[in-house]
Image (cartoon, rainbow, N blue to C red; front, top):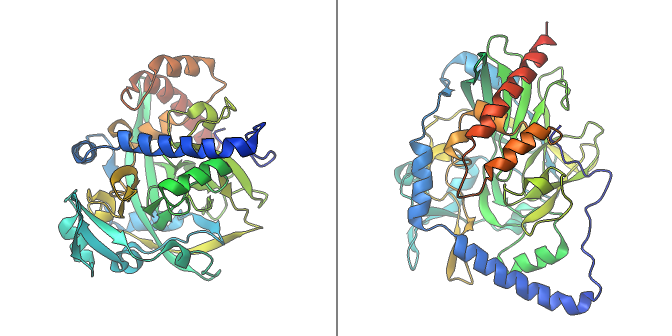
Length: 425
């Protein structure tokens, strides 16, 4: 339902009559707009702390299940996805064994101060709530590309939650299993238009836009009583995709759904069932859903195209070892920067090039409850009533009141989940 599959058609290219004359002009515009937009929209430290405080203090009805419970571990093991990456792209790492020991610890300022050049796991715990501190990974991107083989294995970080989809005529209890991987760098979508890539080189490195990529999550949704799968939620760049059992998701007999990560940008996608590579639309601005969902072919400035390797082509499967950390672990809850804080031209710090805080800082407080998140992203662009509600909401970064949308979406999701569960009877 929600896939924007471009496997049968390559993305449209921009056509210019006088390309040679326009190239310098385009690059000048990109540099000016890129630096200007990034600088002007970069949040101050107070703004950043405001956001992290909202997440840390957010209240919802979702419950984090006890990580020490053997049944929780069994569920996480049973439904651990199979993960594939492109052979020429980044491979995920273990956060504490591979990433942290190869970082330096800095304190932000007019001139950043080196605090330690030998960082330990305890250091990360000590500074996790110090928002003006950050880690700087010392391994260069070139050293991490095209160097791994098919026997590679690493950690996947698993957690479990219980929530309820509530409507006026009842509720459905759900278990969500969340799996997170740690990639050393996040690059721009690899099939983005050449002129955008050229301009991005002035601002940063398109293959390593920022250090540490930890927000591309895989969620397996189960009905809480039967523990039968009903769907998955894939957390991508500022948006999510939902796939439902019996619709666009054929559940595998071994319970390990196949997920392929996009080249360089490390976004999780449902693997193609024919084993083929494909290209899909993506956007930097989640408000540009018309392009993302295929409602419009007008490509926004921040849009690009992800390359998703085929399982029978350039994809390599990663052997995963399930790791369960405390829900309060810095990997999840740190407000410090877990990657470098780069500056454009060495002068202007920008949020877009900053290494991220912890995994939990990935969406707005109203959608931290995964039942709410699933309802919001259960989008049907053929539903005229939904489109009317969505357009009336006029969502922006400054106005994200989704209450009317959720009032419409919750009953629709409940009906769909009830239909899926009836198929198991």
